[in-house]
Image (cartoon, rainbow, N blue to C red; front, side, top):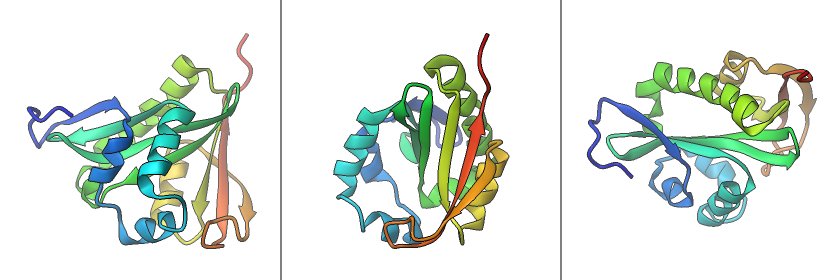
Length: 159
């Protein structure tokens, strides 16, 4: 972690599983993630499963996210936001949109998708901001059996 950066600047760094331990997750996210493997184990799996980054402010993680590669060119987006992320929402949104294109251009993804809890309006709006289209409704999908909405983006075949 870069502890020398000013708290009013943000920096994108490669995701490391230890970043997740420093996030103060929103209570709703923490409750859902607690139904899965321990956070440290889940973070290690996500670090190994595909490209991922952490957005830092003043040396502390604000948001961790990336893509779990299913097979060549196809991945599931994931994002864990700390409670402080709301103070940086515009910068985070811009960085996330640029990162989505980076996943396409540098990491070879032609399709990215995300399952978003149906009742999480903030996350649904974020998926749409990223250019993901609503593709379906998935009752019982979440670890708590909550209904999720599948959003996806297909970048088309490259010549």
